[in-house]
Image (cartoon, rainbow, N blue to C red; front, side, top):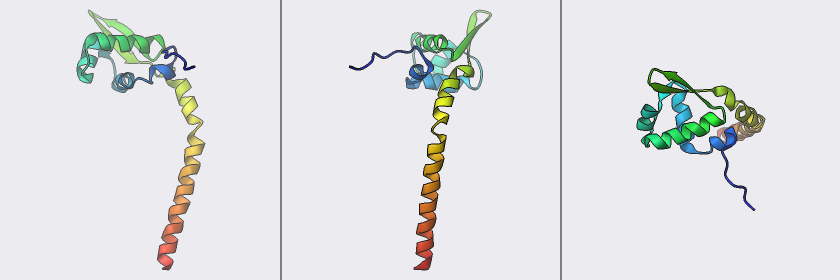
Length: 113
């Protein structure tokens, strides 16, 4: 039986492309929700919902600035994802090394012809 979708951790939270888009914008600094929503072409309530999920899993922080709430990236929450993806680095390095050796072999063969 399939597991119900959840946003209880960073992996599940960033599975949603619009949340990844929000995080990408927040890399540059803090944004109010209205500006994020406008930049991403979504309604303010939808952007707020995504920000709530990102806050709950520790990827976004919020601070008050006058009448505005400013949202910023808390990249510490991405550590588990970074560590997990990093485990595949050796796989990709080996794959690219094999591809490079194959291409060099093809080039050598074509020079000999």
